[in-house]
Image 1 (cartoon, rainbow, N blue to C red):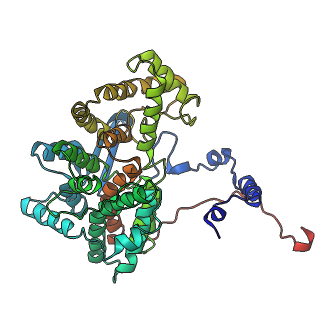
Image 2 (tube, rainbow, N blue to C red; image 1 turned 135 degrees about the vertical axis):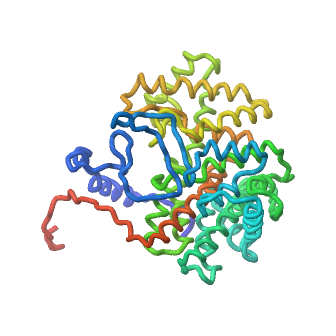
Image 3 (cartoon, rainbow, N blue to C red; image 1 turned 90 degrees about the vertical axis):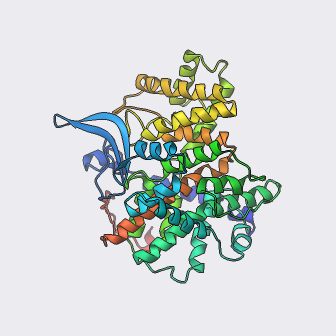
Length: 454
């Protein structure tokens, strides 16, 4: 079978797909009739309580007089407020990824000796099996780096003599190795793709043990391996802000669900990668960047509030950009008044924009952040506040760091693998039952008809 035949949508497939749609659509009124929380969330955005965790916590409401009142968003890692954590390592002028990884995995902040030893341990795990790059990553490079990353993770199973051992010490070892290897797997996948598909020179830089995770990404990605301290610190911050977001986000919940079956670490993490790949989850910042590229082309004056508001309204009317009816980067499933990650990010983004000479674009982002909630409130009935989320600024940061679009979602994965690892260990440590929510059948009963009478 040729490649074009493999991917061909034949007339028969198209006809059968229509039958699939006809027999798969469920009357939306039935969700209300049976009080089904579609997406495991109610109309006010509250999630259905499906588990307990000590790893991450999201706060978007306070209780006042027995009622829920929206508040400025707060995010906690192991009970520590994210603003305090960021202020700590930024003020003390060190990278935060390794330190916060330790916190999420072990429940407490490391002292100086523990942090040094842990960083050395992660560095020692940045070593792929012999010929892995040549035999796995360089063979049949995919145009989607998340696909290559998931394939690489599943293939690492074959190199692990204790792949199916789900004891906590072994799972911790596997998770630490994956945390250390994700940057290499992702960057090498991109280098292979850009070489074979785009004809660019192939650069495979070997890791340097003294570099932090953020430095290591920039070092291996750039042809000359050069980067500034500001660039590395901003990327480090971005990864810390993306590391964990409670047990209910789609990919982390996937980690819990798959881990509860007792499967191996590689299968569980590959499943989470499949979730994160989705544009409604990890791919959102790419949509933000592309939306702003379209906006910059369409606007005659970037600081004209009326013109910017009209453009945003056209998005909601499905007249502009991708006709989805969405203003990407605005709104969140949980946060209402603000996303603390976006608030933290904004100050540092401004510093980077000044250093890169892109303040005009930063001002446009700030203006959209101001106007979008107003436009949405006028155009639609909303049940909670709307504010910029972390994806609103992260794509802009990655573009200023000259990171290719193909790596935007893998960078999210390089960070979120930490949260997934902590949640996988938590699921296994509590020895819970397999996660199996109920689905109510609303299908009409039908009698079997012999083949000759159909």
